[in-house]
Image 1 (cartoon, helix red, strand yellow):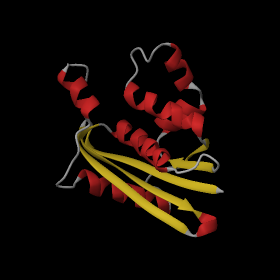
Image 2 (cartoon, rainbow, N blue to C red):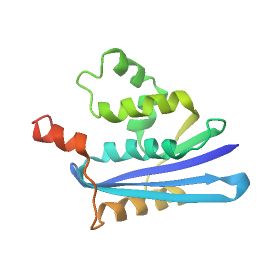
Image 3 (cartoon, one colour):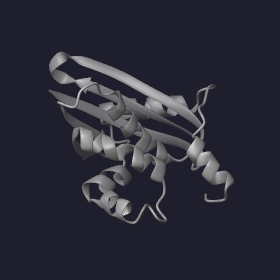
Image 4 (cartoon, rainbow, N blue to C red):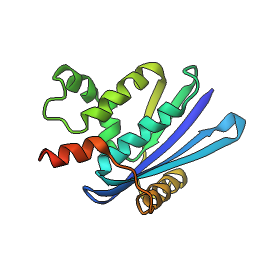
Length: 158
């Protein structure tokens, strides 16, 4: 079965309040679900990557073809151009977001994924929905703590 995942991250300030939005769709079953969460202090790239991670973590089976559509060159290039493999080899030395990259690695091994870059803010319907979800989540009165990022920021690493 084919599962389509559309993701986007947003941040008001960078770092600042952020959020992610996800649209998950199973076309052959006419099924669609939306997800979003907001964080009080994070970065846009963290939200872009976290959206993909959360979507993959929500999958109940590993037997599907997963197509991920994102406007994040950071995410797509890191995976498709094998940057992530090199970052693992160097222990993520001087790389941002190692906690999230380490979290996505087993998910990429578990699922049959294909990544597709789409231009953001260009009228792509699902990307626009994801953007709205992410922005709304970032503006929510209830924001989560991006614990890794805030701990790194307090330690002077950002």
